[in-house]
Length: 115
Image (cartoon, rainbow, N blue to C red; front, top):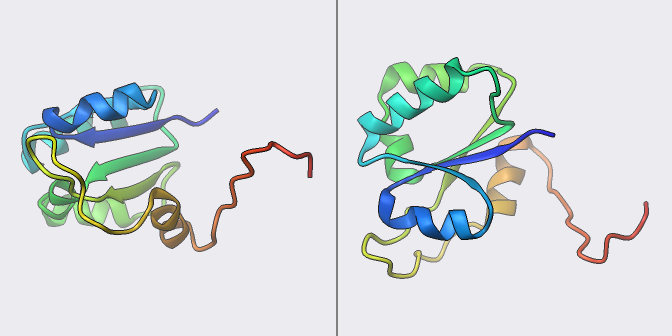
């Protein structure tokens, strides 16, 4: 099953780990690029890589072109959050981000009804 990996600053990592998400930390966009290099060079690439918004925007043109290419994974932008543990600013939910990235909306059925 494809894995979800998030790349976030260290101060936001604990929340993602508590949620059971594979979490990689980076201090800035340059470090996030190094984490991406390591992930993409590995044998088990995740199905979804969600990146802290300021990191994604700061990756530079080389990464922007590479991530725009069709690949075996989806890149989603995580809302920025607040350093120091404050609440994240209002914005899109992960479901909305995935719908925008993939082109259609996912429906999650918490009851797990057979369809």
